[in-house]
Image 1 (cartoon, rainbow, N blue to C red):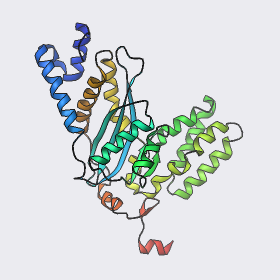
Image 2 (cartoon, rainbow, N blue to C red):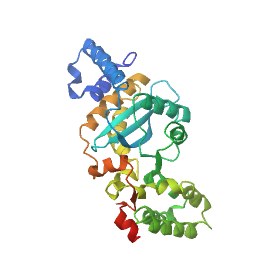
Image 3 (cartoon, one colour):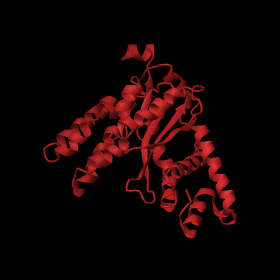
Image 4 (cartoon, rainbow, N blue to C red):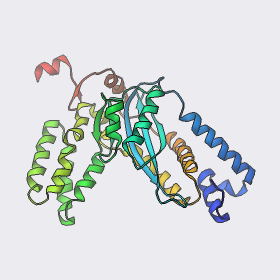
Length: 300
């Protein structure tokens, strides 16, 4: 992937890929590293996943520019968390503009590698991912990302109305109970529907999927209300791939994302409230973030 680039561009790409010691690397060393990383990536994407039960997955499309191509590379990324609370990249694959067919291929590959049907999938509402998920893992619940939804709704409003609207949206997902969230949801619709119907339509179309997190442990809400695990992990990766723009082919870009992703993964902490994950995977019911027992069910 370094073929045909200038010396300056090559040096910049190497700094991104291997760090400040890049200046001392020979061409043969670079070629060897490229081959090793490609082999590691190919082995990783074939590794079995059935040694763990996967409770939640986060999905997103990450875009990066490439030399001489009109279309940006869209890397389809999936992160999963197992019953021990350990988060791992499960897929980093080349996609076509987050299309349903591209996501279908990713999910079929994960299923073939032994991944179980997760209890919940989290992601942006604008992806072909959801149609593919319903086909491949129909029992998996869907949670729309509140961060993306908030931005999309606010984009339908004039700037002067956005601060109050943003707080009104926060009142929904920050509610202690689903009933409270529904009340705040209705208030938002009543407040903005007459003047800004596009904003309320944007919010209402994913109503059920925005509220799914209430049926899972409250300790997990911070993590499962948004696709932040991918967004935060790829902040650095986006920065570094932007610096190397023009120096990589599609395969080279994927290999670099994979290597940077491995580095990021080592710094991840276990999911907060990981001791509840085993209960989620075995089908224990939760209401408003609290485990449903015979005692509190009778009280209700």
